[in-house]
Image (cartoon, rainbow, N blue to C red; front, side, top):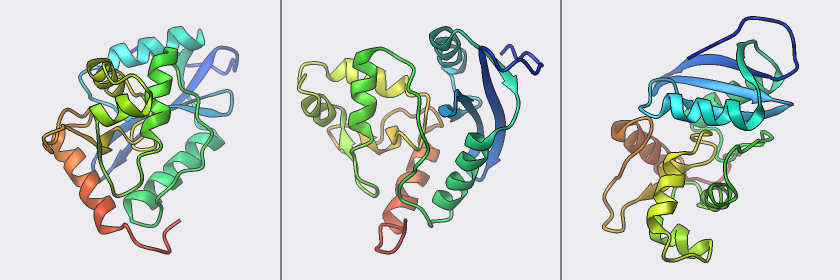
Length: 183
């Protein structure tokens, strides 16, 4: 991964690495919005990073900012069972189809699951199940855009950028904390 050091704010995606109890993340912000929250060592890391860099015509620079601080705070609250919803401005970098899938993912309620088929139906494209699965896998804002809530039509856990054990932990965390009174 190429990271340029510098202070030029033009064409710069601020990134920070963040270790949490479920793995190490890379967080990125651009123009006051979160554009990256992903597992640092996922298989598609380079492809996801390249798509974001190209889409924003920018490079990664290790630099902290208010959005990244807020993202880390809200992630901690979520993982501690104190937060159900995030209120960080997001910048989704992808095709219109991918963005429609990611919008649909954000409508899957905390503590519940859905399927690729149901997401395809929700975006009124029932035959696009495989394309929905591909867009789900291309999600660069994990946890906040809850791709971990998508399971196979048979109820089995299927692929996740952070790995299936992490997906299982996130689903269990949400099911255990699906209570009234959490933000």
